[in-house]
Length: 449
Image (cartoon, rainbow, N blue to C red; front, side):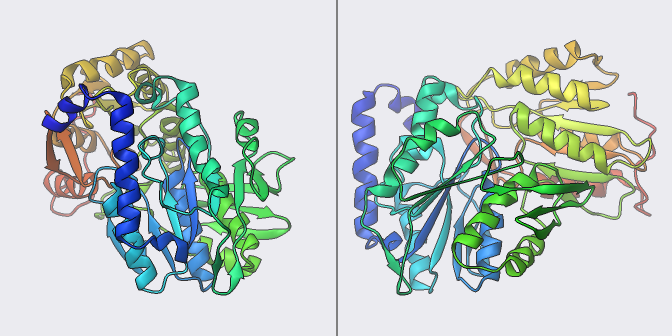
């Protein structure tokens, strides 16, 4: 808390220089481990974590020992741990230490979820990236960067870095430096400007190098074809088809057969905190998802609606971060939840030092504008555990409860204090409280209370 207040008084250039020097020192301290790895950076506003995990799964299926750094979890080959740092891209010394562990344990490839904040703070310095993936760009995080152009430019640092180091040889083979872009993004042309050895595109529309065709979405996954090869996903959400396309493209680039790529994609059944179903033998479906802005919220709500049984209701819990983070997204998220869900609970996410009630009200007013009524189908409950309990208590047989905003994050920050937290664990605990002994599901009695 003291550190965050102190930063406000340090000139931006001084702070930037400090971050740059620390990143250089960290890379040198650990012996520049990224030079021994094929490093794949995944950036974008949403979808990064699932995309990174799909890439990891395909590379592992292809026999390439691979490490992963992502919002949800870290992996070294088949060993994994949840990300405990409350940040996607850890501080330089932590990040370089993890890269060193990958190299020392025989990894040849690394998938690194790379954020705009990490890039702005030079955490990528000293990391030799080989493939840069752009998932998409929306207007989230613009306040932290001082505007959308600065936000987009921060993302561009990843692509600039591709040609700022010598070409690598890993396992005796030259590693190409590739920009892999979402062809459906309106910002694609901005990223085409950066000089690289190769550019490839992916998307759902014709014109991309890797196009998903014959897409069939099912409640528990999807099937599609790319260049005639058939692929099946076992994670829910139509949006995951696009998240899987970079894995297909990278797999082909690295010589992995379509059959093995398919095997890798199908092997990924759960990404912690990404449309993760919590099963305690209840009669309704409970899902935890990281959705924390309007676009991802709509995608998660759409996927959750498809999981509801005929006539089943959709109950959504949401909130937004404080600490100067994008305030404009709050009403947009509220409006979205108000339109898509039958019941809405607005609660804390990470208020930081901001008054939680103000954040909740920003969202709740938009939920009301979308047609919901307080204490009937809209509930404002500051305490997140109580909010989750309320959302679960509203559910009956065939309903879906969608808990959004934190995913598998391992802490919550309130008044500058980091509190241990895991939505998935809390959902399990609260279902144990509200479900009857037979665990047949809530009984609908408090639907309108």
